[in-house]
Amino acid sequence: MGQVDEAIDLLRKARATSPRYYFIHLHLAAALGPRGDLSEARAALAEGVKLKPERNPLARLRASVTSNNPEYLRLREKTIEVGLRRAGVPDE
Image (tube, one colour):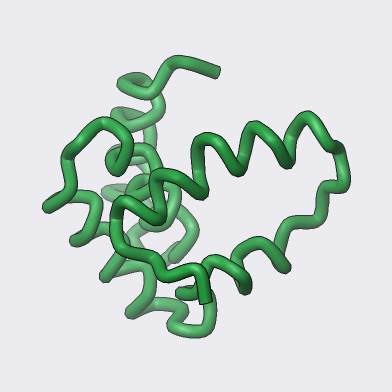
């Protein structure tokens, strides 16, 4: 929704509170990637992958999406997926 800095702050707080939830690390990596904070994005990605290795490839992440809302899927592709690619998540 265009509030990346706020999202990053909230995700960092969530990670500090609940470090065992892999998706918090992945979403933080996705938010940091487009902003250019690649070392922190890669570290967050590595931690998320360590917690849930089967969620690493982007294709598997896409398969886990339960929404079929086209607007959400387009927005997800333009934000989360771009951020994860920049952080180092392979497409396959």
